[in-house]
Structure formats: structure tokens, C-alpha cells
Image: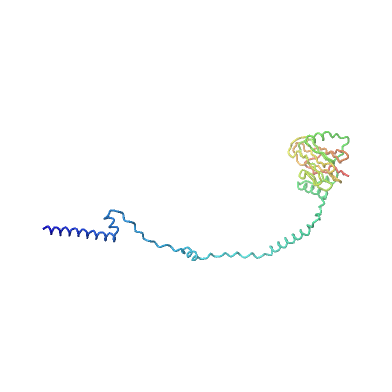
Length: 281
């Protein structure tokens, strides 16, 4: 009986040993099943991915179609008008190069006094008025035994300058009279050309707006700068601001040797007039 118990115990141990061997081999074939048996997490199974080709980008670039090359438009064909303009501009440039000779001054333009007087007449015609002979003869009356104190007072008040040659105008209302002088060169000094190329200046111009009833205007040449020749003094009634249209005026002339006064009167309906003509020798 004891022998049979020993055999039975030996067989049970062999069975258990064999089952253990079986379990070990079956867990290697199925790691998931083995993880459940030993109560641990199975290690992740890494499935290798194929590596991209190192030349894939180069292949893509090489397989791209080449961009179409832009062809510049052909230049426009010259038209007859354009050809003539180019030829004219070339001729002008050649003429300028021939005229600009080094060491030679361009010819000076001579201003004709008569043309300036004609221009004044034309401007007066544009106002719709009839021009008279006032720009052909002296209209001012020479005053004897003159008192120049009123001239000096107003010129000092306005800070007017004095010089070798000087022409001053005064009147006694708020109308706008304009003084201008035609120089020996033919240039006209006036409110719109108050500095001449020969050195004359209009430094006081009044009553463009009705500022005062004791206005003064003044033209002068600095000492030793007055050109020799004939000077023409012109008066114009430019604008009527006062109720009285007729405006008496006085003009004082300093020709570098003596002072003389001329007087007269003018309305807004009359054209400009020459007051006097004097010479500087």
C-alpha cells in the first residue's frame, strides 16, 4: 500500500512538472497570454516602418514642369510723328551747343520804350476805354515856388528811402493811384515790377486797399547807381475807393541836380498818362 502511494505521489509531481514546462513554452509563443498569467504588462511590439527615400524631394523637383519663359514684347515701330520729334529735338540740341560758345555772352535784348507805352495802351483798350494821346506828351504842370514839406513828412512816415534820383507821388483821398517810371533801358518800374535791373526800386506803394487819405509812393535809385539817359514818369488811376472820382496829385522829381514839382488831376475813367520826362547826364 505504501508503494502504491509513493508511485501516486511521484506521478502527481511529474504531472505538475510537465504542466509547468508546457506553460513556459506556450508563454514564449504568446506574450499576451503570458502577461495575463504572470500579471505584468507585456512589452510593446515595435513594427518597423519603411524609411523614406533620401532622393524623394529631388525626384519631385526634377519631375516638376519647367516654367514658361516670358518673351519681352517687341519695341514699337517708330511712327512718322515720333521720328520728326526726335529729329527736331536733335536739331535743337545741336543749335544750343553751337550757340553756347565758351567765353561769349548771349546777346542782350534791348527794350524799346515805345513798345512799353504801346503795351500800356493795349491794356487800357482791354478795359473797353478809348486810349488818348496821354502817353505821347507830358501832361503835368510845373509848379513854381513849391513847398516840399508835405512830401518829406509822408516819406519819413513810411520809411521811404532816398537816392541819387528819386520820384515821389502824393494825393489826398483814399483812391488808388499808381506811380511808375520807365528807365533809360526801357524797363518799367511799377507795383508789379518794383525792382529794376538797373537798380531802381519802388519801395512805397499805397492804397491798394483804402488805407489812408494821405498816401505816398516812392521810386529811387541809390547814389551813383542811377543810369544816364531819359526817364519817363507815368501816373495811373488804378482804383476808385473814394466817393470823389477826380483825384488831384503832386509829383516831386529829384534828378540829382535839382528838385521840381509837377501837378495834375486824373479820374478812374482816364487812361495812364505821362506826367513829365527828365534826363540824367
